[in-house]
Length: 302
Image (tube, rainbow, N blue to C red; front, side, top):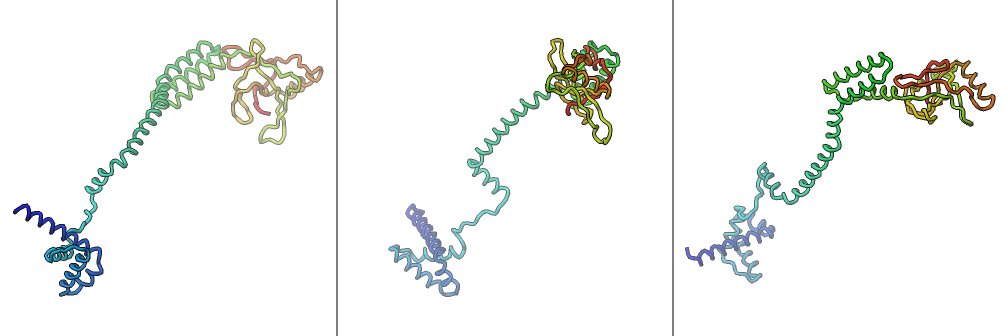
């Protein structure tokens, strides 16, 4: 086949495609001329007129080929049926659109993961690894300073319990036991005196009606702790009215009604309580030694 013949074939094919395109855009002509047998020639003539009106001369065999192609639905694009292969192809083609956001999210996830590892995982691991040593050191400190064998025995029991929790990897429970031991250690190391507050415009005592009771009163002297330099220090004190503990500089010490009014009379004399020392806390002991009659009950709010 010569090159000229090939070019002619290509031109005919392109012309036929143009004819099909023209027919598709003028569906009224197609519907009118092709819906009845024997009218193909009229459609052929109409097409020839349309092209001649545009100054284009199209051979009859090309027009016929175009009409036949339209009937056979050649040169018509039919979408590929959806499948996992087509979906995968669409994802790959559109990768430039989604790859950057996905990449950014990946980087962001790595940043947060690293932050969590550094700020949460590593410190938590360090705390767990140090727990056994801290529990042992705190217990040994209690044993060294405690003056009571009962305190020593109780602390050893708590340590053994904490060790069993560590063996079971119950780190939260072991941490709670360590907190208890540290509180005992802190109290044993404290040394202070207790005195009734005796300053102007400050209460030296209060009475309270116990929660849930309609009769009877509880009497409290307002006291504070001072160190060897007469400086007021804060202590963690248990409130018997609401069963909570808090760190305070003053608290109420429960005494008898008789003791309460004796101190009140002493203050009313000249505004000063002469015998304001009511107890002393020595190192190695958990509780202070009181110089007045008291139940040891305390409150932190009044």
